[in-house]
Length: 54
Image 1 (cartoon, rainbow, N blue to C red):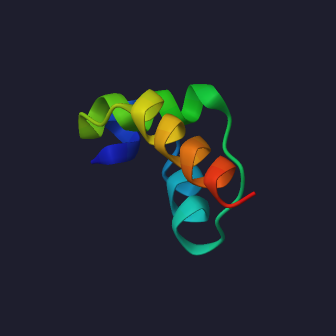
Image 2 (spheres, rainbow, N blue to C red):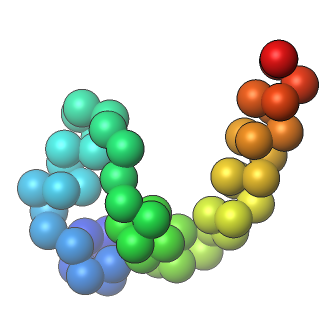
Image 3 (tube, helix red, strand yellow):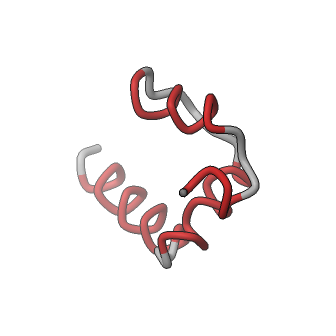
């Protein structure tokens, strides 16, 4: 279970799934670790796309 492995509550994960909001960096890093996703790379790519759009 993602919440358990990330040390987060199930209600927090459920809230992110149903009502996206801006989670804390700590929350993103915990979820990224469990999913084996490089959160820094995702942020870097999003930043590049944002700057290209301006």
